Length: 160
Image (cartoon, rainbow, N blue to C red; front, side, top):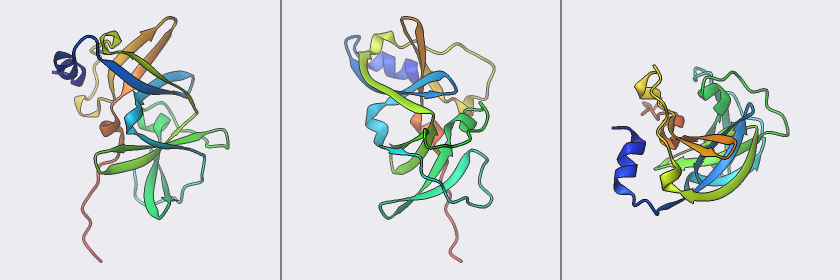
């Protein structure tokens, strides 16, 4: 059962969702606004050795060291050349928190949960399912991202 199907079965058709939309390479995406801790301007990240190519590095967020992900790269859409026009969305899922680099934040909005449509079945790795719903809004088409799937998995490190 897909995450959308699991959630849709439990939600009443009158449920309202509050989402925040953003742009990556001319395409609109959205996530639940409750996952967003803050929106920051671009801050250069300190690179870390032996990390996946979608991790730009780490930044210090009020005393907490946090990874910054190139969301375009994480979604397999190429690399971003960060500039002052880019934005970092600080997102959280459970105890995991990270910054995701996007081209720009569009808007926050509410919509009926009944408008969510399951994404088409496309041959892809089920373990990397980033999109759980498609939202057609007039001539716009937004993909809702699964925040927990975007964040890097944490590993337990042995002390030196």
